[in-house]
Image (tube, rainbow, N blue to C red):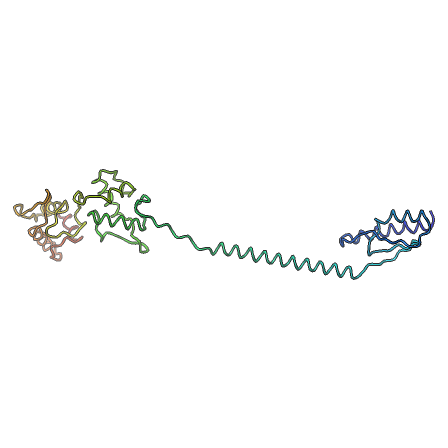
Length: 282
């Protein structure tokens, strides 16, 4: 092996080692422009070794000499590009993070959906529920003499379907020959809307009785007064459509009972008077 071949072989070994040290730079490339080689076989061998040399790392002369030519500008440029890429990556990451956070914040701060407002008949109403449909239902029950307005209760400004309302619905369902579940379904509501109040079985306390009223509540009152020992004069009783009417004689009987029970003597059937009357009638 001649001297040139030996130098070229050494160059191969050296450049191979250097190329391993610079693989991360991404700039490994064959050096070109061999100069001054006069030996034809040496030129062929050098050409064969070109893929193994590294651009900007070493340069092999025509005489087999090796010179390190790493260009500082290349490294600076590389750092510049890396810095640019890094900055771009940082911006993208920050932008994505900010955008992502903004999206999440928007989802968490979204306006809550308002509860649905039901019209009467859209749902079956049961005890404990409230809403616009419950309010409409109680209006119908009061109008048809199944409920007293004083029995209503509210929660957060809304009428509640309480035990008194349920009892009123059950009484109506019995009068209308419906299943007395106490729940206001669409069928119950539909019949209540067209109900004839003259068919209502009115219970005592649902309305304030005045002279001239007639109905089942007047009949119940007469019965309680009679059992408690304060029966009105049967000869003075009046009737309308087969139902007894409220008279002055019945009002006087109420006053006598209130005086004996040490209650305010008003002749009006308030809740306390009714409760005492029922207790005395047992």
